[in-house]
Amino acid sequence: MRNYLFILAFLFATQTGFSQSKIESDIESTLINAKKGVYYALSNLQGKKTKFEKLLITDDRLIAKVKVSKELNGIKIESTGFNQSNELTIVLYKSADSLIKDGYIKKSDLETYSEEE
Image (cartoon, rainbow, N blue to C red; front, side, top):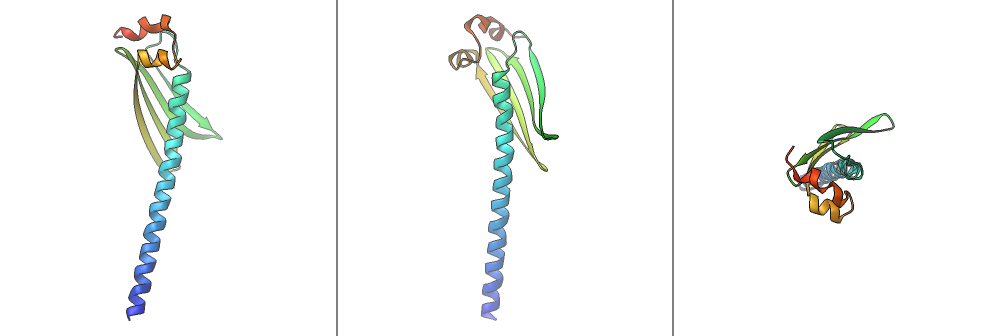
């Protein structure tokens, strides 16, 4: 009887460990897709548009949905990554100064990011 309980406890612990490992893997894959959306948004900041949205699709699968909007003194990026039945959203705020410093916009574009639209 004692061995039977030990075996049951071992099987339960193994299943729980496997489930957590699978969830961790799913979250990581979904996070990678959400990051792809953030990188897309930063590399495609468009002149005077106040906002834009884009769906990123690879191999006929939606991997990310990106929304970019200009805010007072910067931008707001919302990127939702998808992987199978999982979705994860990253919300990122970048100031106009950091966008210039990191090379995403030019100093001449600063006035369009400094005004509330």
